[in-house]
Image (cartoon, rainbow, N blue to C red; front, top):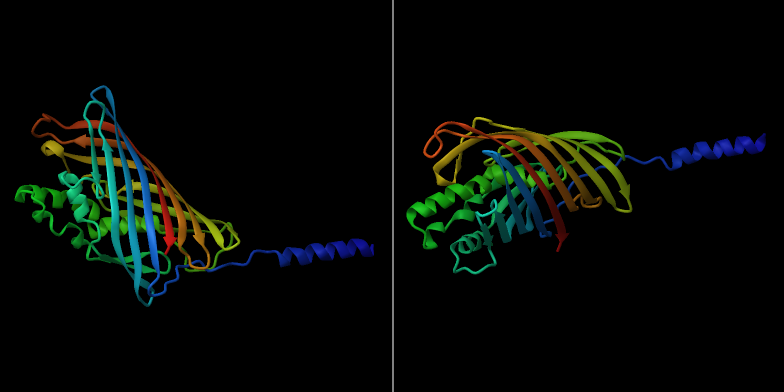
Length: 309
């Protein structure tokens, strides 16, 4: 009987001794800290047009250097600069491809344009929970387009096109997607919390995320998010090539897996996968005699790797 009581006492003590303690997860900042972010993304857009299936593929490879400049009440202000930007766009069969490479042959205008956006500083003000408070200086990225040998009309068109992806709201949404979101309370393995962010571009969307702390092990943690994606403005008119116009009605899901350094809060690797389905409506005008509904599916996989220098 004494042995049984002793075993039961050991079990009770062990259950308390090894019970996981809640932990505060948050970003830490120190002036002068430097990080390099690399993004590799593959996106595919499948469309069904007039009885034919078409596939558009887009591969992106970019690198951003980040430098903590000042500490704020809630986080920090970080200077960011693109050091590399490559986009490889493969159009449907028979329509060719387009490569834009900041490190490519600058005798090609598309490469010269990408090169002009490299090493242009802008700032990001971020909270310790991973929320972006503001983006400033993003207009620097498109300064000088009119000095690249483009006509005034070409320069204006290029600025309009690039601004859809490099506006304050677009950059804010993109960084919030890359950054792991943290709650304002201590958490342990199995705990969940929620947040939402918006990505403003041609396909402006809102993502409602449910985050889960999966595990903590020897200074690293795995955090995941299951997101529901909805369009923000289904009536927004998007300018397409050949003076065509369209709007989009898409919805889907997004899944994130982040491996983070628990002592700094910074992720070392973030994997993001999304699937969206719906319709693109080509609007009547020009070559389009009447509105045309085109079913489409958009899938994307991204890997972000973050290294402290």
